Length: 273
Length: 315
Image 1 (cartoon, chains in turn cyan, green):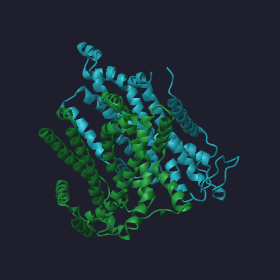
Image 2 (cartoon, helix red, strand yellow):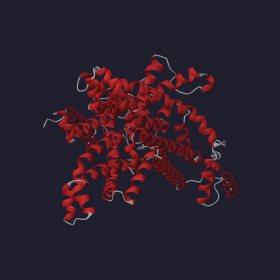
Image 3 (cartoon, rainbow over the protein chains, first blue to last red):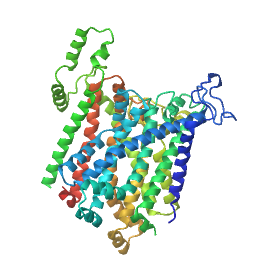
Image 4 (cartoon, chains in turn purple, orange):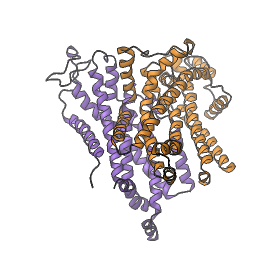
């Protein structure tokens, strides 16, 4: 089967930023903690490939370390959603029509009704702005998304014959959910995780931009954008670089998600043939 | 239908009560006493106690919840801790900016998304479709606050057509007000339009595969006629649902854009109130936003029930 082009482009973009983030753990061209005010706003050169920012920090190094912050925040936020949302959705599907199902799904709807950004700001402003609180704030709103996707997909699988066979064999509902339902809805969950990942990157950038994400000196793309705003008209490069990274990363993840969905959805595959 | 309506109404009421309890207790656990915050470090305990009574912070938690809810129902949201004016007045002033901004952004996004989605669906699988879908991917990926900054650079500084930020107030006239809201509305509309165009495209493609479109073509309508007369109307249902939800999210989601453009909107009011521990404002403003989303969901459910009798028997 031929891989969709958008999947390849998306995966390449994502892999590029992931590699930069991983590399920044052990090596960056310059230290992001090195302030050199005398060398501030320096133009790109051989020592500083993208130049320096308003505090004389190397822009390339800042972007690499910023990728680490963005990816870490979004990744953990998605994991929170998966770890709590999927079991909730599976439980709701396994007890379809019961009071438990109703309670889980109504709680889900209710969470959806809350303005996520406002609650995220409330959490980070109350418990102090930090990367950890940003993760929590974004993660909470991932829970209902995964619960809903998991339930919807699981309901379909529960109708299948091999599930009936498993029930006749005497397996409990919990065991069927873990052993048979989960592997069958995993592909859908992966696609959704990619989408939530990209939304997490955007949310982290937004929170950092208003000063409620990772705190200095931890570099973050959103914070770099906010800092660069003052110098935007003199040194647009400072704002262009992080903005380009955010856009490319989100674009990469979205393309990858769409590509995966096209590849995994048999209905679409048939339509293409 | 009456039964369906009753069950939806009950669900609406329960959701509103649950939402209000969640909001109230969420703010209840927030550390920091507003009275102590207002009076500063050197305040006497008696003064703090007196102010607590004045602000309605005394009494047990359930008592205060009931006081808040009864006030809310009667349109009395209490007095802001920092501004010392009625909260409902503050919120109404800010809504006068946020609601038109959300509506403006929604109109722009619809005007852009409907034709674009239509063209993409009509030319499915061809260059125009790929180009449009690529652009919408970009529109979703660009952070809207960054797009806002670019718009300011292009249309407020390089070509000074619009103000770079601030809001003159509607007293200054309709045109200056609209002018101040144009760039923020465009910045907000871009991702919304991108999402909407994609929804429009897939809804149209779904409809175009159905039998009644073939019938329409068979009785002699051209492709374009079948598309605009029959497919468009049927594809509008999912599009309208998204539109309704987008409006309620735009009311609150503008929070960062309002910061970029220094607009005195509801989002910035909430943002400032959170940082100043003006929790009474946060409480009612968030409740208002949640109320809006829940009501939109309710109305969509009802509209669906009216349009499609099968859905009424769902529960």
